[in-house]
Image 1 (cartoon, helix red, strand yellow):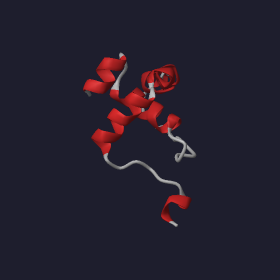
Image 2 (cartoon, helix red, strand yellow):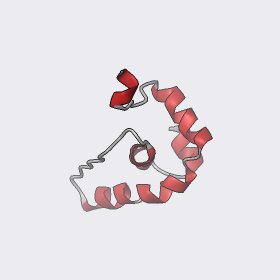
Image 3 (cartoon, rainbow, N blue to C red):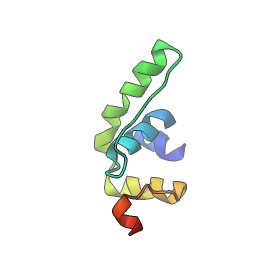
Image 4 (cartoon, rainbow, N blue to C red):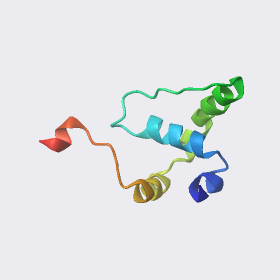
Length: 74
């Protein structure tokens, strides 16, 4: 969560923004059981400009599971 805190967002918002920013992710499906969660999820769009190459590299270093395209497997 330190990366999300540094970005001024929640972990959920950062995760959704990461999915949106990743060129190997074609669809982002969200779920929510409360209206407040829908609002929080949609605020992930505001996080996108903050996901610089360095921030993405920091997230990837934590995750160690970067999605790959089908071409990467050939």
